[in-house]
Image (cartoon, rainbow, N blue to C red):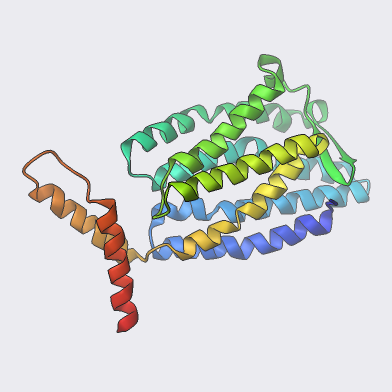
Length: 268
């Protein structure tokens, strides 16, 4: 498998309109999905940054390589383990899941601490080279790696990415869909770690960027704002009229209302 500037820029070009579509669907449906919709756009920026890393390497431009690598690694090391739990938290309504996601969000600033030395003194902590047609980012001397070994950070990173995908239920997808998404991400993480160990960060982020394209399919199923307002109104009515303990509006009934809404809309 060969990676190049063309591969990175092509991925960026494909991800940008996919992200724009997701943002548009979120704006027309439910604004709480907007952070999740931004994910393909952020991946687009990240892949473009690595494209410039390739250009810098080919031109022997150390300054361009360093600046572009710092942008790429900001997303890889700090942004994703913060943004994924946060974006899933904003779409979640069930208390047990929200507690798990909130705990991850509270702990997530540790990733900024991991990245900070690179931003402050990249010449000391970062070395960027090409190994077997992939970009290798050598950060083995980072202070955080003296606190805990590299494998601990990678397991934690995987947890911050996969656990929100499994715990959260932002849409009508069932447990099989959420489990499948988590297993797919974990499998790509494992393949990147085992097969492309020499350029793990670069390859993993490339695979993850491609997987994020599936969000466009998921967002195409997102109900319009009228449906969310309908469900919210019915839920509030149920809570006000209930004489016993407050109960959430049944999820099965919500999905039935959505189906009926679209059936009536298409028939008129």
